[in-house]
Image (cartoon, rainbow, N blue to C red; front, side):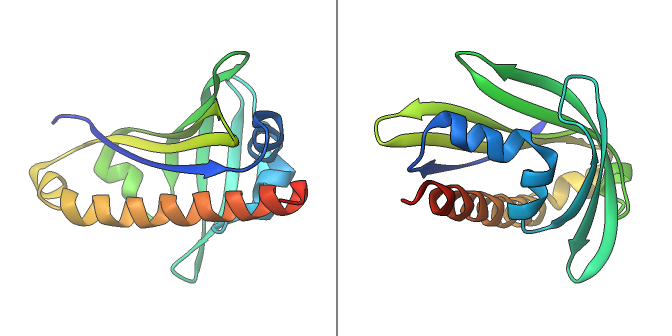
Length: 155
């Protein structure tokens, strides 16, 4: 099955460094993320992390491995989701999620992205519904990140 890529963007009125620290530091990341309650582990290349989450009012967890991190001219972090309690990781392969940051006039453009390959035709046929849910989730995450960082920066 072809890869599905879902992207959403927001302009945060703060420097790249401030946005990056909110994403890269696991304890700070858990403070603003609307679905994560706690992160155990580190945000460095190859490191595993466990995210304790609440989705749809139900507690759960994801097990993720950092597969990409860049902090120079390009600011990027991405994880592969190895397992999750919702069962989505059993319906897809190569499920990845992350953030890209770009300096822009007046702030930082943040792109949240998720990619995966459906494991079967049923999941592929459900792609419009899945995509809608992913967009809603990513937009909610980006809005919370924006509010957190802009409040910290006094914007």
